[in-house]
Image (cartoon, rainbow, N blue to C red; front, side, top):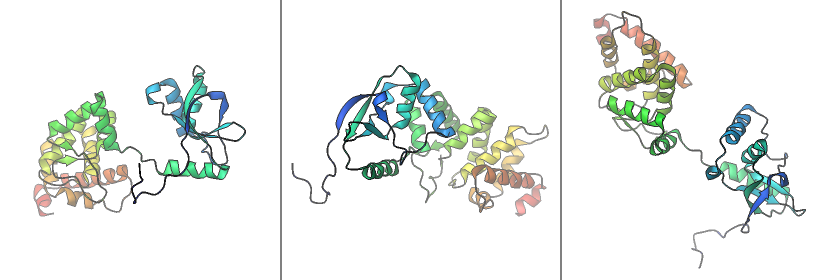
Amino acid sequence: MKRPPHYAPIEGTMPSIEWIHVERLSIDHAYQRSPENDASRRLIIHIAAKFDWRLCLPLVVSRRPDDTYVIIDGQHRWLAARRRGDILQLPCCAFRYESTQEEARMFILANRSRRPISRLDDYFAALAAGDEDALEIQQIVTDAGFEVARKESPASSPPAGKIAFISANATAIRRSGAPVASAALTDMAVAFRGQKLGHGGAIFGALVKILHKPKPEFDPDRLVSTLLARSADEWGRSANGLRGGDVRSTALQKMIMEAYNKPALAIAAQ
């Protein structure tokens, strides 16, 4: 078949697909990332503890002139297999590179071109898999009258009636419980009906903090009335310039409660 004229020529040669003994594999510390950090250790332990062949993609390795195999991509899977001791071979795509420099260049390209899965993509995949946590989030969001946005764009907010702060929901459920997360979303649905929630995550976090352990005299209806005094965008913009989701939520918590504690006429006049 002829190559389409707008495509560049294919680079490199086709690899051989091989099962290689774990003891024949190694890494080159000149360019490979060190696994001696907390995040890598946790990942290796997790893969080893719950090793699943269905998730073990072939490693990308360099077959050097002396017939040694050096890992370009997949060292965590390799280290996890060695940690277990009962996995003797791993599937590998073996390439022949011209030099260590070319190996290092391929290592950089492989890692830079890898697109991490977004939190929303992870949520929808978990939902399709029947994950209990994802199903619980879906139920809470739906009961409040929202939908989870399928995409999140840094340049624009989700449409009215949709939210994208799934990670904040999961954290709220874990730390404060599903009833608190549900109440916070329901308050937002009532107070900001028909509005885009560009600052929704920060507002939601603030409401969760408020509703987590309210005082006995706390009035939920008054909280909703307080929220109604401003638009969602106005509340969110009042915390502009602050970095970090928790920092912004804490600042908004303080602002909302200051407004909550003012007389009703003062709130309406803001």
